[in-house]
Length: 482
Image (cartoon, rainbow, N blue to C red; front, side, top):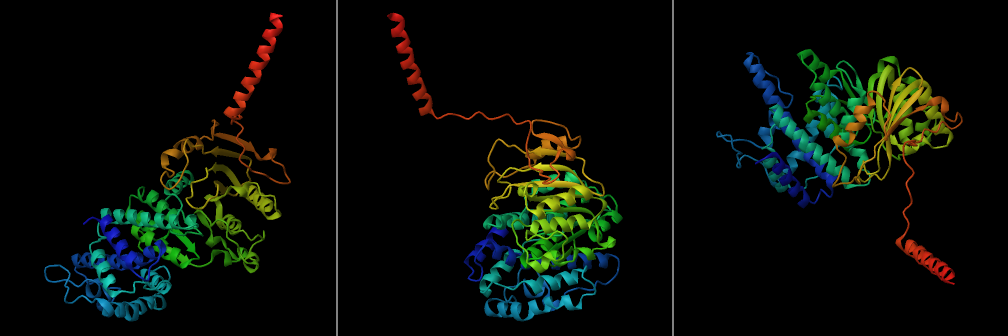
């Protein structure tokens, strides 16, 4: 049975499950089961590697809590031992009363937060088992046992399927953008920012970790040595996420993409006082899509010099502060950021233009974010010198974007090609900051190359005018005849 079919079968069972009511529940419940199967495969792989070296491996998980003991015990032929496998209330009681408390305790006993042990504890502190029926759970575990994480092909297929689940979850509600930024857009942002091996890469609103995963894919293809691969595992990617479910999905997504112990913290980034950020905290690259339309309480706003209730604007302040001198950023934000006339918006634009070189603005059409219903721009900037000239690119597509017709990388190929030289085209132009109104610093997208569209008239109007002209012609002909 292929992996896609296994995922579908698991979803079908969860759909019948009383404790799961929507796509978010499906992803959450699938996630903890997949994680434990992944963990078991990882430990078996590590044990086999140590055995080849003539050494013993110390398992992270005690024997009674390992997948092959409680979830899917095997016969001597390697098939599921249905006599030994728990089901019904026995299975539910074991998961709820023994397994989850045991795994949750790892958070207290782990040596440091950047270990796999700590991540296990964090994940199982954040969620609970919502699969009420032990019989449904038995079926799900049997299917999940058919998934494997040993080879790079397995991991690639798993990451692809998991991403598609996140995408579905993103489409499931109004807050689609919260969980899912379209991957073609992320890959394009990564190409423009061009992270290097050795850079520290940060997303302070990482959601399902799409930016960090795509940056990992980009750099992993370029990593040639064992040392470079280790740098990508331990010293490159850093994320923060406030919401519990998004945090878990972000960790899982990074693990499936190949990062064993992701450096993602479960915290409210905006609760940090901006003045407390030290040089050692700063990062080389920031890639992010902070949440649209959120509102923050006044005590959170006290952490920022420019006070505003708009979550995305507070994140922008945070990102500017978090960049090292010479650091690069690609940040998605609502297009109203460019033109809002309130004091905070103007002050933030001034801060950005004076402390960073805002070299590129990509204007995205509506429909890029399914369900979010907002128009967005992507800001590309470098910290350390003021902006003198901004290159704009307006993404004009010959179709409407939506669930069945999403953005693809080919749509953005012209932007990527032109951005290297900041060339002018029907969709791109440059603006000198010295030409801006110094009071408002309005950065609105105004394409000077766009031809004025002729207003098409209604057919009834044209017919009416033709009749009037015919009458005039008849009068003239009569007059000539006389």
